Image 1 (tube, rainbow, N blue to C red):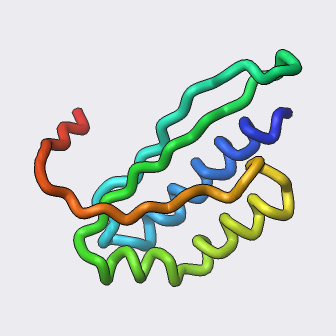
Image 2: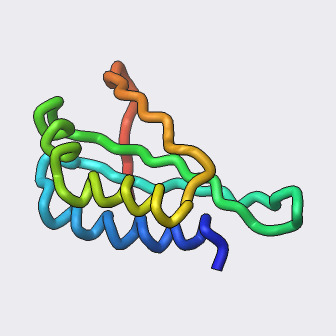
Image 3: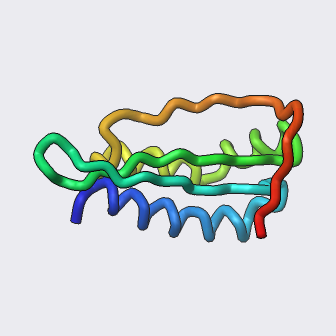
Length: 99
């Protein structure tokens, strides 16, 4: 199985743990696009969109054992070509309709 698709499975397992233990997380979405690599293999591009009720909830998320385990597993298993960019933004408008 391609490492990109192993990453997908791993992320979805991690999401369930997070949902059960982090009430301050209001939204956690995994968005993806499959691309064909130079060698013809399928590669997965992933974007995570996370929304927390407060900065404290985000900090709580980052202190969780599962958070550290995700990054440790990504490195040990070679599930990403590079570690992800993380950007913390403040919402200034828009809407969220998850139906």
